[in-house]
Image (cartoon, rainbow, N blue to C red; front, side, top):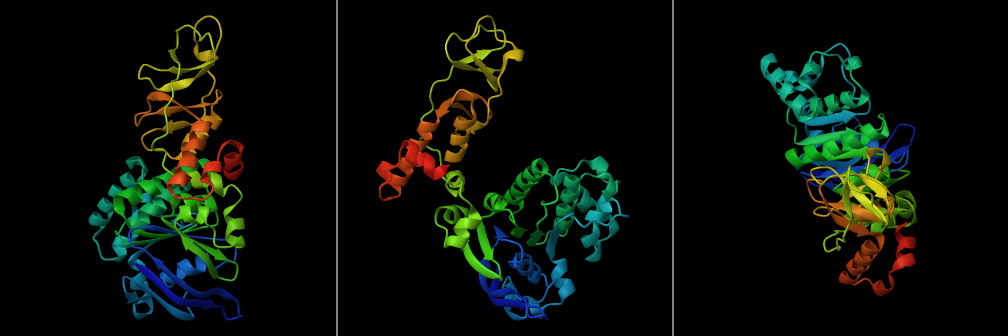
Length: 375
């Protein structure tokens, strides 16, 4: 656990970067600091490992005041990942990852064995071990940075906008990889970002900072989206927070409707749309009514898929809205077609969820009214 108690950071020119911060970072969880430029989120992160030292208040890690510990010793026990990875350009990938274990006194063989294990953990091929950072893509370099931070198995991991310098597709992949790793390792992670969508996706709890280093709200993502503390948080989270909030509502109980299914070589549907599946009943795309037989050239992309066993209301609604037929494709955990889901089904599910929670006026949440709220 990491505790901030009345923490302030005032620079020599009088600028207050962090103002009387009280906050508890829970052990084994991902806590995200988010906010506009100049709000003190990065300063708050760097005070944890004394890269920046507070001018007031106390910060403790596992009950021990960080100022009572040697700064270098403190940092060796806390993993640190930064934007652009910060790798040593003249060391191989293997030796970059082995850096902290070597500083802690491990012999070279042990350190390199640990580095090789972590390469596999973060999804780097073994043949990359002897390459240098300049020979890797940006996403691969960030994976090396994460592996290096994990090399000595620290209980705490600090991540300062680690994915902001890569393209959106790579960024999403790295976010998913981080969530996978956290599911296996259970580290105490403090993650800084300026992107509210990244914060909502990754954080078990999210701390929203306002300019001047003041904490505006500290809550679970679902609470942040549904009940912003004030106009600043409401504005920062964004107008589409209602739609994103559907990601925190279970789709359990949504009805799965029938769905016409054909295979390549079958006769075209005579009415409406049908999903084309492969031999394992996995969707390949859609075809509309026509004559002759189904060919691969006739396939229409099918939009997103909805995992009926582990989905959210947002996933179900997105599948319905992105489908060319207006019916989303519901699949099982192996990606096999189960049936279809419609936007109306999701909206009824949302209304039922509100009624179950005792939300006043929930019985009026139907059709266009819900669309206005989540759109």
